[in-house]
Image (tube, rainbow, N blue to C red; front, side):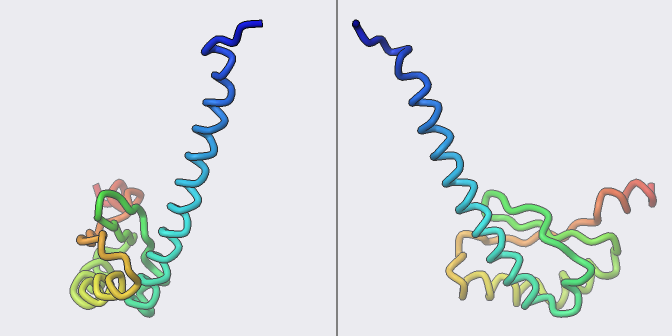
Length: 108
C-alpha cells in the first residue's frame, strides 16, 4: 500500500493542535504573571480594575469608573511597567487605560 500525503493529514492536525496548546499554555502563564504584577502595582485599585488584554507589547487595563482609570494612570502606570521589567517581561512597553465597554454604552 502506497502512502500519500493525505495519510499524514491527521498527524499534521495533531501536531498543530499540540503547538497551539503549548502557545496557549505559555500565554496563560504570561497573562497570570502580568495580572500579578498589576495587582502589586495597583494596590487597592486592583479590586476595581482588570487586565483586559495583552497584545503586541501593550497591556490594556480596564475599569468601569473613569476616576479610577485616571488615578491608575497617574499613580500606577510607571510602577507597573517597572514591575514588568523586574519580572523579566520587558517586551511589554505600553500600558493603556480604557473605560469598560458596558460603562461607555451607559454614558453614551
